[in-house]
Length: 309
Ligand SMILES: Cc1cc2nc3c(=O)[nH]c(=O)nc-3n(C[C@H](O)[C@H](O)[C@H](O)COP(=O)(O)O)c2cc1C
Image (tube, rainbow, N blue to C red; front, side, top):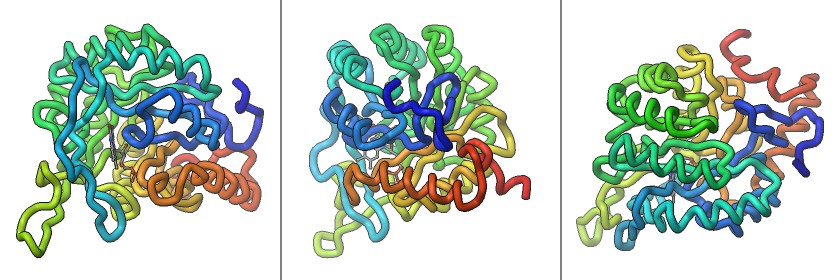
């Protein structure tokens, strides 16, 4: 692996070798092999694709994204080409990428999740991330991830269908995220990603109407960072599998905060829309300098440190 040099920032995430702990979050620029490659070349330690389902899906009409004070509210409606088309992008991505490729999948039943995951794994996905947390599409996403029994069935079916690591991406829109995390791990999840967006709405004061075509959407960006850090902190106290922190990370200090809370790696989404792809390099350089200044030889030494000191 070209970028995997022995160094302070190297992470072994359930067998995936990351040159550094930063990853592209699902749904932001992860539509094609070309964009995935450009993100990896910008310095991401791993990349996650946009969520893909069994059949092609157009998504919602515009507007699908609205700017909030400290972030974005989106309700895209999971637009995607369907796995039978998307396998071509996965194959192509595997020939050009020098970083691990995680394919995010969703379905409307446990069988659908397993079928999509199997097809993605067969053409080279290094890991599967289950989107059981999208807050704005009926009968999938968080409607599955909010119910521990249904979630366990999905995870169990996917684990039986693929021999690659399975990450389960959790929703913050639940009473106790650690309970849900525990169900996912008992069913076989190898790692957990926390969090997806927080349910939200924006209303146009001139027209008196919700702005998004779907009315409700999910809030991302700096506004949700403290919620996401708390989720990681809660999950770390309950389960032993690695956690991938996500939500509002825009600079190295945010990334370090997630690691101290218990994350082994972090994902970045909205910050790319705000700051561009350079965000990966500025964050990794900042993390490296911090670790050096504090006298740590490896980034792994600070994972969960806020629980012990
Ligand atoms: C425009 C947009 C599209 C997204 N699409 C997906 C998706 O397809 N699958 C998924 O699991 N998460 C999706 N997300 C959620 C992000 O991956 C991430 O969990 C969330 O935005 C919080 O991280 P951030 O604050 O760094 O953006 C999307 C987020 C945004 C803003």
